[in-house]
Image (tube, rainbow, N blue to C red; front, side, top):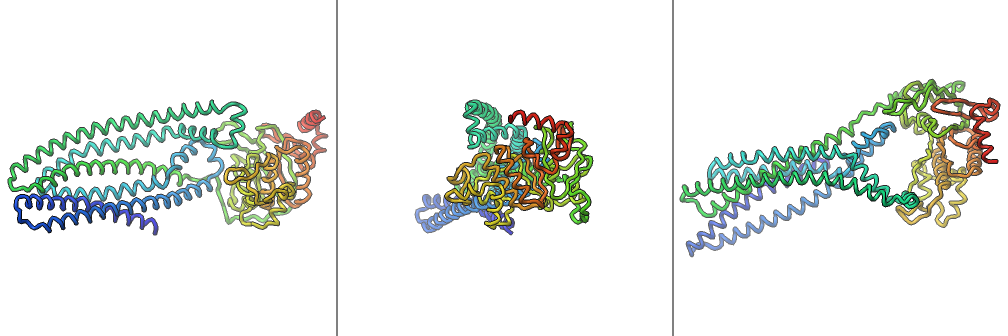
Length: 579
């Protein structure tokens, strides 16, 4: 309904602005003729002139009143469009699988359509209404020109053809420039973020990188603006040549008009003035029409780009929502069967021939060197990536065929690059399950991650804001942020808890205390965690040793030590380091 009202109001104002110029010219014509008659015939009725002046005044009032109303409605409608369209983009992003974010072209596409959405969607409607208005105005001018000589209309149309061709060409060239330089634009925005965001300041100062990134931003910015300026220069030069040609056409038309009037001895001065003005305005309106037309073509290219983004197929999951398999207790709770995985546009596999069984309620530690595939394995398990080959089963069902909301209910995950929300401590925990705002559950989650006592000692307690981005708050240490992130994962109260190195900023004792506490208080839940410290992993029911995307060893701490393999070497290396 709102979109229809936008169209109706736009068309209404187009009609008003389309007919106003005609009535202005008509009033001017009669006013000039009456004034001429007044000077040549002294006893002419003066009241007619007063009425015509009043008519001009009314037309001016209507014109600027409608203009102000249109400006207000335009700003309001752009705001509403921006809100609606951005929600559509957010909804699409929410549906996107994680693998899409690994594709640079996806980010280029998003960057192209993700700015001034309301304005860029409003422009086609504005141009369309502008074209309606100009066509109506041209029709009124055509009536005036036709009354003088029909050939004037034909000549004006022929003279406008170069404008249509040139403006369309320039608009298409500008769009191609934006597509070609989207990567450069993204880098400019990225460097701007490095220089302005609070979390980056420490490293910029420590490594004295501020000046370097300033110069890099300046170089990229000037490179981008040079292209823009060259494009603007070319457009200005082309339009200047075009306007010069149009001026020559006008001189020729004016000479022709004088010739016609010379032949027609009975034409009044008012008729000549409005015929001449109609000739000028017709050329101006035709240029406006060609400009509206070319801008609309450019806007259509953007709209196509926008809708292509919204229509990006999402084939990451082949969801069979109504297919349920009854879970048999004797079957593995979680099972990897010959799983291979490689990232998009990468030739080598990150995971190779993974076979793994996890029982319900088991506590699993995954250890291995950086880049060995630990985090990738967890992302595949949580349904964020779909395995390239093989199957991952949960309760006997293939995870890739499970509905996304069901997977989300089953898993609670905290990655090492978790989000640090600049909101209150309570909200940071509650984001684990936004449907639950129970204070006792929030406190319980904080207690399990050993941060409740610290929060309780703050003046504002759980209402304390973190950071100073939105409000004046406090800064958490890296370890405190990690404890808070674990609280968020626990607050979700899912059956499976995945922790991807969320305790790396904690000291060894704190890390061990948290895991031992979690093992004791949530015995019925399955916990899978990544750690580089064997001291934290030794109490797990099963330890998985991964290297180069392959499971080398699995078993409990004692069994792996007795096997004297990679785990044994890592254990004694860490023990030697501690000693």
